[in-house]
Image (cartoon, rainbow, N blue to C red; front, side):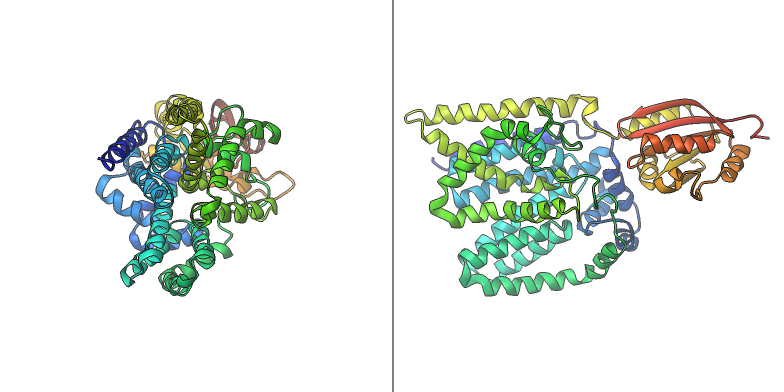
Length: 499
């Protein structure tokens, strides 16, 4: 009878998690990173690795999986996000399995519940990117490592090698999880250090085919200036806010946007969560092996990325860290149990009250995520519908950066003449040789009476004005629409220029 209640409760938690992740899966239009995944998935198998080496900053596993999935389910929004939703639901069950390895059944259920209803986990689970897969593999590889240390065996170590390699093939942050595993083994499972090092040799051999492409990504500085020097520095407060309740409340950062509240305000907002985490860690001091297993992936990843961020060598977006949420949830659940246990005779009521407090934070964020159109930037579907509705045959589309072209044409698949400029080409001033010259503009005006400018970040409004000023001798603006993160301008050729 004892096993049935936790089993039924876990099934209910997983059902709630599935509803949250599969509901309205295709409601929001794809943003650029999702459209890029779709575009890569539509290429030939043999072209994926060269494309990633030349123009991406991630390893290939999630792209190969997306390619295979598109061949089965198609490339609609819901289909593209389905794999992430499945991985996110699986992570709920794996969170319970990890928590049960190191703590009690109530802590396991509460950990799974925290992940199941977490707005941060839901957002990552409805994002056609690699973050949900990374979270699943981080949990699975951690559980496999524990099984190897407890029971050994060639097959178990072989399974760990495959899971560890898959983790690093999904995202480079996966390497930090594996590093945390190594520290844990060296400190708490030293008799198994030699097998772990041998396993790392197997992981390295599996990763070797990707090494040339990784070198090309580094040499090509893929992602710069996005990942380098000053565009956005990791804010620990915003990250913890996303972990705690999904962010976006009280001026805290959201899945896409940095927050506006200062450090003091962040500490005040996050104080209940910080106290709970502290109580969770303190209650685990008698079992530091378990505490380290749960805490090291979070600590190693946080220290490494924060150091690089504050040194302004690399920048990181908080959404990349959603894979750490299960480890955070186990520690938080342990803290909640510890606090509730101090209410003698009323432990159950106290735990229910604390859980209700978590929901009081998370439910408004989920409401905004599902139903507030302004919660997500980059509404490419709406931009494409505007051009489709007001466009005419023969209109010319001038994209400012390739990301705008890829995301826009995911929705606008009608044949059209077009040109894609980089932000630098589009925005160079008169003191420099512009890549897009007045001569080119006049040539366009003679062939195309109407021109649409479709631009997105990192292009800025000031740069847009510079581009329009370069075109104003031959084109005049007749309309503009600004969406969050997208600018759409319609220009018509002046009569003299079109002759």
